[in-house]
Length: 357
Image (tube, rainbow, N blue to C red; front, side, top):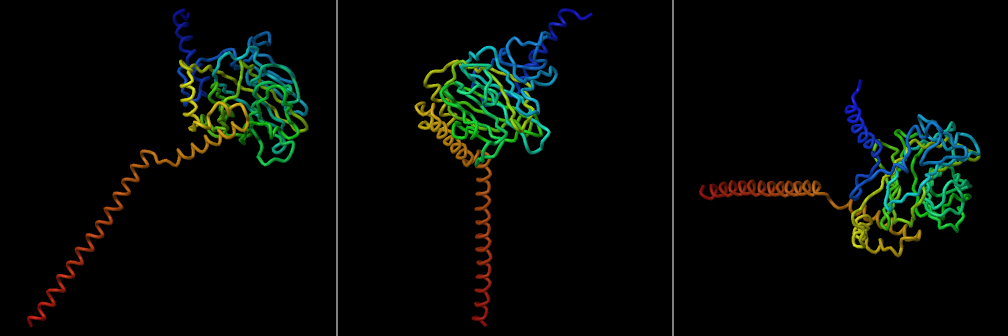
């Protein structure tokens, strides 16, 4: 018989362990004063209770729940559409969302259409934009795996699209001229679990990072000034057309980022820390796509300048190499002088002997 004290001890031990596993996607570079898990916006197996419901999430369309493995938004079939939405909006001003997902299909070459993560003011409305409604209000992070028209960029293509509710998403051209920023990353047949990590710090920046190459190694897709989000709902949708894939959400964990002070001086200091250019981080440019792109370019230039700047270790070895170089030069010059002096002395002695003879 296990005592009550033992059970309590096991529970206290299990909770932090579970939190450590589920928080493995948290960005170690965050400057937040505290990180608080949001149970209302996190999702793990078995996903539903005995009545096949979840207190915090709704699902619909062609979505299928495999309680031991994933939430499947679409199967590898043509013309499917599915969705998964939080029932409550995110009340936190600053937050980070980490999601493990799987995109796969039988065809090695033809696949699509893709899925999206949404942070919008409305929820659970099916439509033509990867399973979500058109004219959405908020932010969509779209993982597009099939080009509907020729592009200069390579697919799969990840893009961030902001809409205030009056713009129709251009599906025919994959929203190419409507996105704030985009990148290309491999999302199918990756050597490790594919994960996205979306960080949002209001009035400062938003960043998307991808894990698809090595475990716990994150590649930044974009880091741009944050768009305006007023307590959005969190959703995931996917769709297939003439080509198809299965789109699976394996887990979602969301954390609230707590900052003790958000004074204008603190925000400006954080913007300078992130983007490194005071002019490029002015809020007057933030809510336009061109401003975001310019600031992103500035951030990338700053990063490259930082990489060019020698580190302490590199400066140490450069100093050592400098000393060795000049030491060798001095040794060669000294040796040349010594042997030159010896040759001159010997020659002078021979000349003196001939003169005396």
